[in-house]
Length: 317
Image (cartoon, rainbow, N blue to C red; front, side):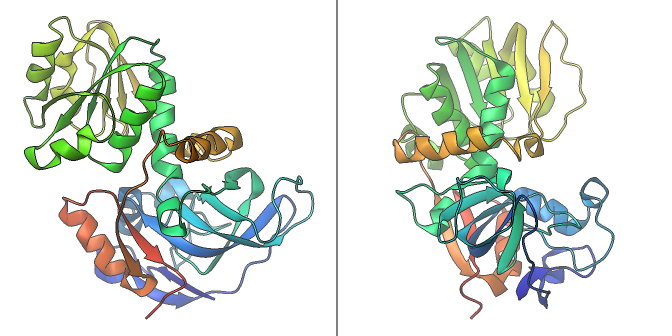
């Protein structure tokens, strides 16, 4: 089967089509015929080698990809009856020497990492859901805010930030979201939010609305210490790149690590159900053939992409 990966870590130009043996599912596993894979910032870190030790990968090719949508085409023994051949599914993939990443025509995964796809979405849109929505869910669960509490979200126009906004609104929180002028309408479309200007001075703008600070802040734009002044004493800060700073004032830093949710079948099915209920919006920036992964990585790293770029693994043209 064909896959897309790197023989040595480096820039987007290192990505290439490679041939791999077709995997067979073992006990507690299913095999997915891959239709679409979302391209995430984590994929670029993996391609560069930043995650090699964490993923315990030793031998090339190294295959990126954590977000996949497709159809089950084989089921191993010792599975429950939840999944069967022919089911449309989405899954979270942890690239490793055992399973490999999602950039492949077929992939074998533990059945606990696989859930039914949203009924209301095609494969491209469905592939953009799980990793970012579950990261957002973990952030909100860590902050543990009660309905009516205030939550600020930076990077609200991005894939992760937008899911935080919509999940927080569904949880009954008051949401303050940042936006560049070109993104204001997009952020408004997410729901009833208060919008502040995006930038290094975002904390000052939040404090204009809430002089004592907000109860929690989800930092999707990776501004770290710049956003701390916007949080009230004893509040919470959710970060997704492992910031090691000490904010003081009794503020708790929650370092979010999405692989912790890789087997949270109930949680993953929950965000799928919220898509079908209209609470979560899936956004596809563009769909490219699988052999244009290099171009997708270049576009993502150039910045300014709204929604997710998606690779179509039914198309290598």
